[in-house]
Amino acid sequence: MNWNQIEGNWEQFKGKIQQQWGKLTDDDLQMIHGRRKELAGKIQERYGKAEAEVEKEVDDWLRMH
Image (cartoon, rainbow, N blue to C red; front, side):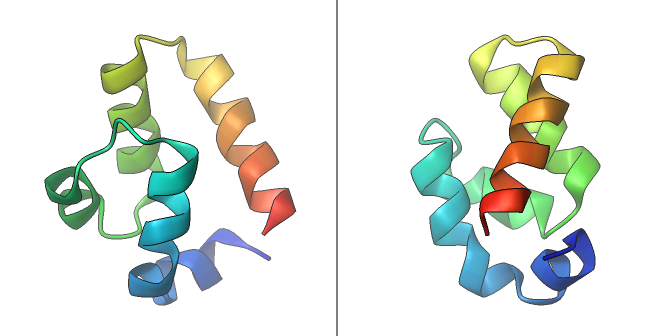
């Protein structure tokens, strides 16, 4: 799957995203609205992780879905 598919079907993937990164709120997910950079930024903010670490997590998650 590629990110364009995630973005195009954001409503379907919000729950899966929240399962993976439970600290993201519904408001966060509304603001992200399928944008990968916004997602990575919110994960960094909520979890205090480095950008490279978050990008790897998002890439790994994307490969699994």
